[in-house]
Image 1 (tube, rainbow, N blue to C red):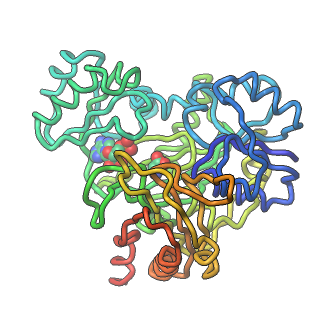
Image 2 (cartoon, helix red, strand yellow):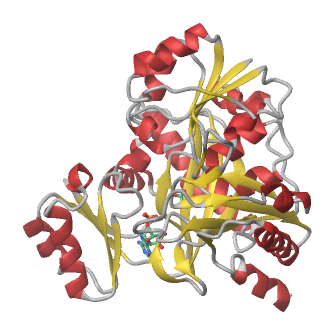
Length: 427
Ligand code: AMP
Ligand code: GLY
């Protein structure tokens, strides 16, 4: 079968690498892809906001499965257009993708379905927001409703900070994404990510991970898209996973189906593990980046079979995903200046050397010059990923690979996995 992968970051490189390993994959295309993805796929230039162009490409290339990596095309309804043209597609339609596209939509759904999450109100003006704030204790969380590239959330430690966040949203700081806001109870605990595949009816767990959102060692500095991750997240014990499956995921899938917006694809849950059990912080409607990279390093099943089963509503007919008990850990190499103004054009060498010790280097933001030189072309540039029998071992292998890279403009955190390494050391 021919497959089209939409996207061009580290997540999509990991997806391409795994899709291409499947005996079910005849030819893989990626739009736009990146130089790493180009080792597994033919790169094509497609305007994914013009759905008819994507449909036309799929017909011409006899595409049997489209895998949509990022959230924006899903929230924009690309999966609906493809399915309407009879093209099996992995990823939710526009209505169900509101789980990521609108924080207020998700909170309302949680309320209707009895899903554990923080108390909240939705507000549509600065005056309403400031008035509603009086009913919350500090700290409090202020969120722009729509997609804001991970920047729309403020955990306010003072009332002044909360008021400023509300004013910023309604002053247009996030454009359309801030036409509405959510004010939310602050939840305390350790965060973990959990993933499940669903075809709208059947649901299978797809593993767990923990991300490192802050730029600096020891979880300090500004928030980023993620500086590293590991999988599994052992803090999410089998009983907590079962609780999240039953009280959060199953209720979500059932409610969306009943209400005529069935969800198909991957559900990415941001969970807070509170003393009273897992609570939902947020949903994403796609794989995490860089969480996907570590989960796919551990996946032993055929990814094409699983994603196709979701797309064709046949998830119950295939064997559930199998994962290695190993830990996978990824270190993000970013370009100097990230996250504000990352430097572009820095030369990258040494990937073969880094991979010779068993690591896998996924390309997140790279470009290939006409003379074959690889350069940095984004904030997060490389995801240096390794697998080991323990977190410590995976961490050691990943940092050995980082040391073998020659990327003078690059930097990374030196403590990815610290929480789990400490836990492991304590036994
Ligand atoms: P999000 O953009 O929704 O992933 O939120 C970014 C981060 O804000 C999360 O990863 C949490 O660390 C934090 N956060 C969001 N909502 C809450 C909440 N209700 N309580 C505590 N922290 C939160
Ligand atoms: N790493 C967080 C995300 O993909 O949203």
